[in-house]
Length: 434
Image (cartoon, rainbow, N blue to C red; front, side, top):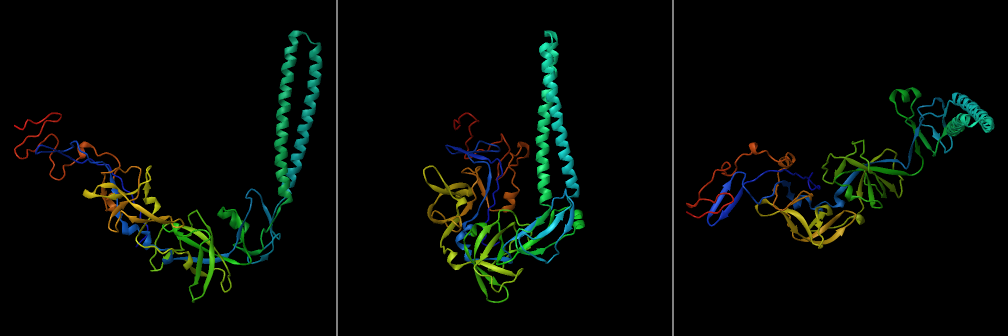
């Protein structure tokens, strides 16, 4: 994608041979004791992730003009619609009826519920009278019979408590039903135009619950999408310029909302000034215009950051995620050192741009240095690679001993090489040099 931010991390465990040198003796053992660190880290050139070359001024986003607000009018699929009061394209005011539920069955259910509550209340009254009777008889009964009276009274008291609970539950249910009957006619919340109206049959066959949409009148707004790699390059309250695709007309506006859910419609592509496109997950953001005069609903336009919102940068700038600051306050990055081994490279930081999430590297790195995106699994001495495929296919697990193959002239385990006429010491012992 050119100069886009690129983060790939590959970790693979592997065993390497170790060199043991002592007094002119060099012993290579397949599966020997070494000081190298298992693992593989993907690194790329600083120039590839240098955000100084990815200026917000070089970006353009595709967008479309839409109403300031679009309201989905949903239905309760457990209820039946008796009448739809509008047609697609109708202009409605806030408070105008849109559709009405069939309340005949609900009114009958309400009446039955009220009768049921009255029955349960009568049942409680009867049980309370029976308890009074049993308590009176209990006082006259002998000691052996009083236990039976006590059991009957407690059983009735339990029945009364349960019935009271059932009454409260039924009352809540009927209160909701009563509100539904009262609000059986669903009204428009905004003034606007009815769009995407479905028939009851369409709604049932498709299984959705959005019967229609109402698009608000008044000023327009612009909806755009940003690539996942460039979400950090926009921010709320950022001034933008809206360009016509037809002529040189430009409108001004401000980013007022940035979405966090992936845009389901991937047709709106993000464009670079070089017309290079990228396919990646995209997120919506919205622009409120200072004036929408001359714009049409549904018009496609291009959006770029206003000149005053851009930051001119020189040298090396990295996203802050690349930089680690330890307890002593010293900052470093993971970089490829001598022997293609991973090391902590101390860097000096300069100014930072909060809206971009990056900061300046004053010293410690050059454009052709290789760095890795940080990982908790990294250790100094790990091998590094610039091969994306190798990093992507790396295995985290240990390689079984029987699958190991000698490399770089190593010999199988327990076989030794004598150099300069010296014999290496036995493992755990010392060489006498004879």
